[in-house]
Length: 178
Image (cartoon, rainbow, N blue to C red; front, side, top):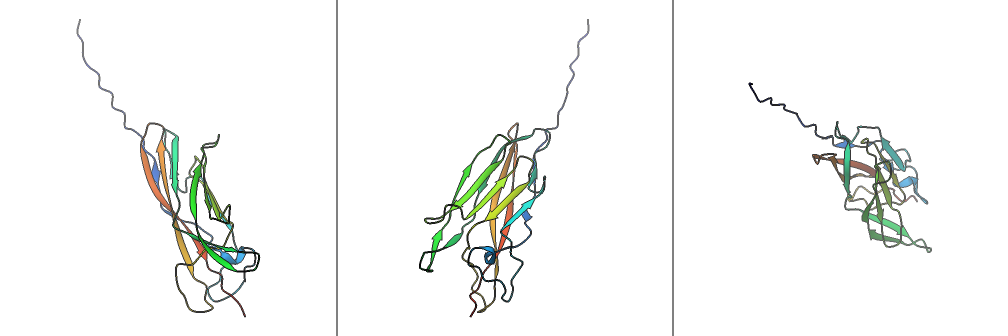
């Protein structure tokens, strides 16, 4: 009897990630006590989201894990006397939930939820901002600046392949009015 070898090659599928700059621009004015208007102001918004596949597609092997890292951010806590205090934000990831989503919550010494990012197993995301943040750009008096805060997103598929991307959330500053 004759024998021979048969070689079967399988091309492994890998996740594909994309850098995203989210829309709309969020606005500190949307927070309690915010002042609408001012040079460079944008529409008041405190939430945004992206559709399935926005951040990544896991491919045929499915989503195995999602890891998130938050940006350097400083929140503004306004005490009972109306005095503003700058507080560093610490990011904590929880999950995955039953649906595969993971949540990254930013908190400070006085604010339990400064911002919350949820990334779903299908590559979609939701972000909510619950407190004003310090603008890293010193601007023209009376002008509102927009700063980008970059979140790192890493997805690993079911057989260990991974890819990474950045999600940039833009937040427009609030200015005092006289």
